[in-house]
Length: 391
Ligand SMILES: *Cc1c(COP(=O)(O)O)cnc(C)c1O
Image (cartoon, rainbow, N blue to C red; front, top):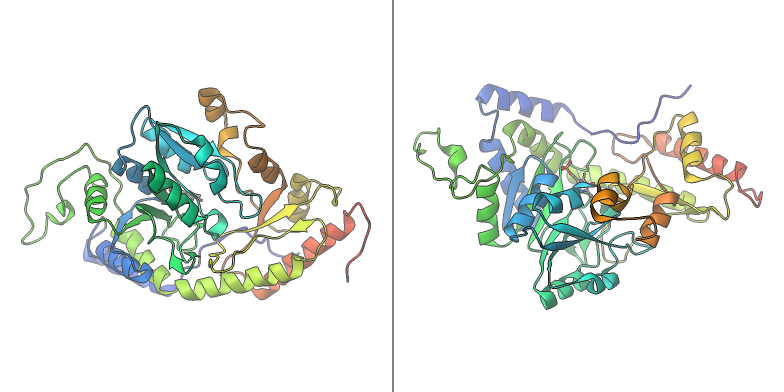
């Protein structure tokens, strides 16, 4: 029996352990010098003016919308083919998410369908770089400029992604990254907002720590002042030095981890590109893919088993999988509150029924990848309507 291959696993080693112990012994177990250092190195890495560390990407998406002054009565354009946080944070501001369908190839928001959904109430767009492939940012930026909309990128999958050679995180008003346990850079829980705008950066810093005037976190230090003012009823969204201790070393080895992800993704691409009944992920020339997820799509005209049965068969072979994502508009809250229904977003719904994510993370071995490839080829071979055989 082979060991069960989990769909995902963080890649932590001794360096992170030593840094965590250092944080514990320093006494800085909430926000402190390691968080500042992590912010500095993150901003340098991307080539962006400001990086503000938070306790999650969700916090980043929420604060970004508050910086855009999103309030009840406003509308925000989002894809439905995403994690619920992208739309939930619109609701946290009292506004209404307007779901736009995805491009059937890139699986990112279809920039050609955005303009048709804009009303006088529209205030912002939240594009999601699905799986680590960038959205069409030129088109999105042009629409945002034309209608004076704020752009808050959801880059939970997109550290290391580029758009036409530019790093994701350097383009829009704000960009939010996730360091959740399954993400490419993992600190357990954690997030970061990046921006080149000084005013937005200042607002994010204040709102992520109770709305207290700047550098309040430093108030217990020598030279720090006990005095602060609350400028806004802000949130408790700051990162801690325990998370930053992990982040510092995860960032240092990001390149190495990304090289492994890319190598494994290429092995999958090579193995599956000509396999009938299977569609591999799209890549776009000039946009570097971060390979946060490796997704396959099942063609139900060619295979006699559906996506759920495909997942079952992989599970029997000890291969873990997941589905990204159950469209947000199909969840009960969204159906009940906004009257969302099946049929609203035909591309999103069709792709949801075809898609699965297979294991891809740096801690896997090449043997693991080969085992998954062979298992998938066998399943396809046995369940093809055309009964063709490969190799
Ligand atoms: C993971 C994820 C989030 C939320 O990130 P957290 O850091 O867990 O808050 C948001 N959007 C997308 C697309 C995600 O995959």
